[in-house]
Amino acid sequence: DIKGCIFDLDGVVVDTAKYHYLAWKKLGAELGFDFTEQDNERLKGVSRMRSLDILLEIGGLTISQEEKEAAATKKNEWYLEFIHQMQPDEILPGVLDFFNQLKENNIKIALGSASKNAVLILDILKIKDYFDVIVDGNSVSKAKPDPEVFTQGAEKMGLTAAECVVFEDAEAGVEAAKNGGMRCVGIGEQEVLSQADVVVSGFTEFNIENLKAL
Ligand code: G16
Ligand code: MG
Image 1 (tube, rainbow, N blue to C red):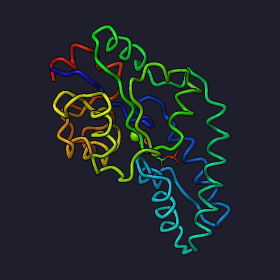
Image 2 (cartoon, rainbow, N blue to C red; image 1 turned 60 degrees about the horizontal axis):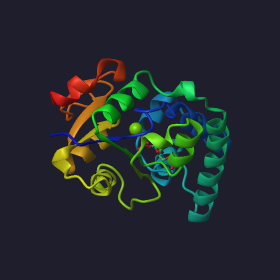
Image 3 (cartoon, protein in one colour; image 1 turned 135 degrees about the vertical axis):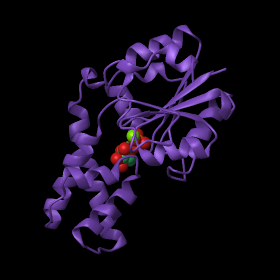
C-alpha cells in the first residue's frame, strides 16, 4: 500500500526553473557570454554549484574557487529577488487538489528537493503546512541521481521505500527514485522520463485513483 508521496519542488509543485534561468542568464551576461533556454535544461534538478560548473563550461570559462563562490552567491541573490515576487497562483495546476486528496486518504506528504531555498519558497507560496517532512539541499550531501534525498524523506516519514511514490520532472530525479527502490511518477515528457513507472504532463492528469492503481 502507498503510505507516502515525495514531491520534487521545481518543475513539480512550482515552475521556479524560469527564475533560475533568468538569474543564470544574467550571470552569463556579466561574464560575457549568452546562456540560452536550451542550455538551462541541463541545470534542472542539479545543485547550485554543479549548475555553475555547467554554466562556466558552456561559456568556456575557468575561474578560481573564490570567484565561483562569489558568482554563485550573486546568482542566488538575483534568484531570491524573483522568488520574493512569486504569488501563490504560481503553484502548478492540480497540485493543491492532489495534496488535499492525499490528506483525505491519510497519505503522508514529503518534499524532496535539491534546492537550499525550498523552505522559503514553500513559505512564500503558503503551502508549508501541507508537508509532514521536508528534505532539501541543506540536509543532503549527495545529489540526484543518488537516492539520498528520497530515502531520507521515506525514513523521516517512518516508511519503507516500497510504501512511497516519488513525483519528479528531471531525468536525474527519476533515476534517484528508482535507485532508492521507489515507484516514480514522471511529470513531463515520456521520452525524457522513460524510467518512470508512468509519465503525465501534470496533476490535472493524475488523481488519487491513479495513485492507488500504480
Ligand atoms: C532545484 C532546481 C535546480 C537548482 C537546484 C538548487 O531542484 O531544479 O535547477 O539548481 O534546485 O537550487 P538552489 O540554488 O535554490 O539551492 P529541485 O530538486 O527542486 O528540482
Ligand atoms: Mg525538479
